[in-house]
Amino acid sequence: MNERTMDCPSFNEYIEKSIKEFWDLDSMTDYGTHTYKYKDVARIIEKVHIILEASGVEKGDKVAICGRNTVRWGIAFLATLTYGAVAVPILHEFHPDQIHDLVNFSEAKLLFVGDQVWPKLDPDKMPGLEGIFSNSNDEYSLLVGRTEKVQYARANLNRLFGERFPMYFRARDIHYHRDTPEELAVLNFTSGTTSNSKGVMLPYRALWSNAKFAEEVLGKELKAGDNVVSMLPMAHEYGMAFEFIFEFLWGMHVYFLTKTPSPAVLLNAFAELKPRVIIAVPLIIEKIVRKAIFPQIKAPGIRLALMTPLLRDRVKTQIRRRMQKAFGDNFYEIIIGGAAMNQDVEVFLKGIGFNYTVGYGATECAPILCYEDWQRFKQGSCGKAAPRMEIKIDSRDPQHVPGEILARGMNVMLGYYKNEEATAQTLRDGWYHTGDLGVMDAEGNVFIKGRSKTMLLGANGQNIYPEEIEDKLASLPFVTECLVIQKGEHLHGLVYTDPDELQKAHISTSELAKKMEENKQTLNQIIPSYARVHALHQMPEEFEKTPKKSIKRYLYTNYPV
Image (cartoon, rainbow, N blue to C red; front, top):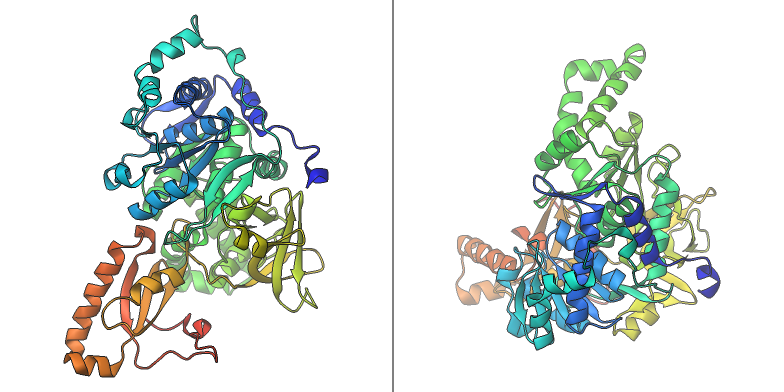
């Protein structure tokens, strides 16, 4: 990797220069509340640095951050990196026991936690933490302090800040840690639904390369002062890289929703804030299209007009303008990632000339692998290899026969934390093996044909691994075999029960339905909220299996529920 990183500057120097350049501009807002300018962010970063230093945190130590997207979350993250510590973002929707496990596994010394998460946690289950700070107020109040240093740091924060900057705090007072390309910056856990999440070790070069990529492909269309709405979890690299880091470095104004991004909430925010770029997962776009647009174009008059050559283009223009207005009417493009688009929706969007594009990424690449500008984007693809990345298809005929998608370049992780076996399986011969299947046309456009990892995508961008839900479901009463599938925004459990077991227990059909409802409630109490199952459906016979007795999952993807 040395040849690829020779020209990679310090990422923290990038942050420092941006803060100084945009000192008096608005930087971040918790939507509907207080706005922080870049100089406000810089001042709070210095206070967090004082907390870290006085608490005894050394360069390279881990600092965990868990909570919904807020200004304080973003500042804690920036402060951790610019101090020289390693940021450990943890999805706030994880089950409390999983949060405990990940904090312990990462060996974090401190935890910054949001108000939604904190009441559910048990500090005694995270014995390695030396301190826990609230990430929900202006002063990062101390929730748990296990050492005198940590208690001293918080109790004397304002005095220590005053001693460090006796007159006033100025832009020229900022001097951040100078990182090196291969230095560990972020330990980002994949969003599995059990403690089996893998810790992806992302170096500074990957963060810099992703930010540089966004500058290269969007910099001409975006400018300092433009708005962006942060709706994807920042504990995921997709939301982190392209709804926060790049915008902060580019002088833009980031609005954190601080609430569930339902279509109604999003449409209101888009109408008011008029974001210049929109980052989304397919389900959000599909729900808006299906609810707000499809019913209108199915009206007899519109359908007739679309069939009339003289009227077709005019109607398409009107529909496109209606779509653009729904998203704030100020965006250059909508970038969709995380999963494949529904083909009916994509055909519709492409047909009306809507300014959207679909990218492809992975946590292991922080996250970008492929992208193309909406004006050159090829329908059905996920773009071409991003700058500083190479993509190839492991196939005898990459244009026609699907093979595993392999990648290498500056965006690729260092490996999995404390997991040499998984690292060796995933990083081989200099290539990152994605586990996804695809083909590539002669122009370099990549088309994903399947996900060998069977991952599902939650409504807000969370990665969901059905096998882990099935493992818990299979342990519940009267569940002999099971499978979890996704229909729209809901997960459904398909369950087969051994008739002999029912007969022995004298369980009738109606009683079985009640038992399954109880199972659903039990299951949903022990898994993250985003992975909850909408309903359990009784299968009439055993699942069809391979010779190795594995369920043929692909046969049930479209099972009617």
